[in-house]
Amino acid sequence: MYVHIGEDAMVRMNDIVAIMDVQAADDSLIMEQFMKDNENGIVDLCQSACKSIVITDFKVYLSPLSSATLKKRAGKMSRPFGRK
Image: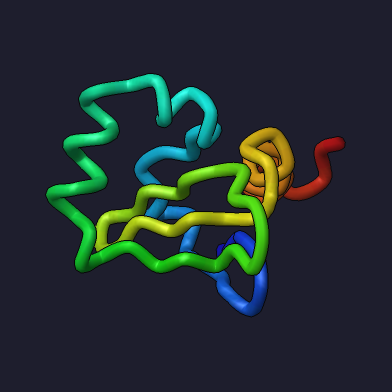
C-alpha cells in the first residue's frame, strides 16, 4: 500500500520508518544532526510551510501535511479488510 504524503509524492507504507512533527524535530539536537547527515537524501515537497518529516528507508521527505493527517492515512491503510 502507498501513502500520499503531499504534492504528487507517494511512498510505500512498508518503507516508512517514522513520521514526525516539524516542531518536535526542530527542538531536537539529534534530529538536527540526522538532517545534516542526510541532506543529500532530503526531498522538499513544501511550497510554503512544512508541517512534518517522513523518514523512509531511502529518503527523508519534508511534507506540507500534518503528522496527524499522515498517521491517519497510514492507519486507515493498515486495517484489515472489513473492519471500520
